[in-house]
Image (tube, rainbow, N blue to C red; front, side):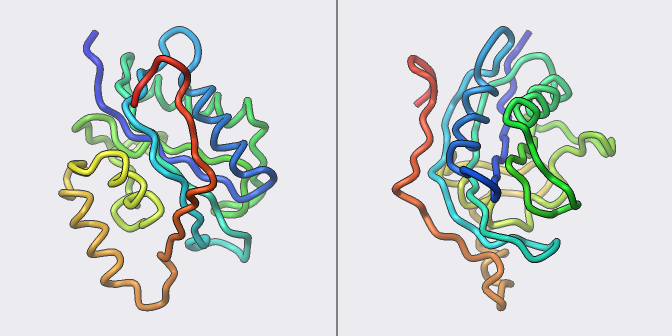
Length: 180
């Protein structure tokens, strides 16, 4: 089976946010059938977009080569959320961990369980900026180059809602012997 380049967005704004992101990377990349890591982005601190009043998020992107299909990767993402005891009481509310499949190769699907590419990725600096760091040539299927999408988001953001702060002090690591 051929590997497909996939992009996962990681976010946390409850508890030990950095540990939640690192735990997600570890769980996503462990065990049989695990995707092969290509790159992990720097960590950014971001204001919440939409939803109720809540604390700042830490966000990162993990780029992987995955086999087994998009739904298998979604199940792995959901398993990572369960393993890290995801807490989330309200839609778009605070959460200990959120792992979203953003893109799976060029696959496009309107299935409500897993819409590909992610239907709001092109509107979210907290996805686009880390993705651009992890893959400067990234393209969001059906939308275009990630660099152009990020420029459009920032150009349209008159409220500062899409502001990000690079957290050089919070580096995520890939498991030994994998990725870059």
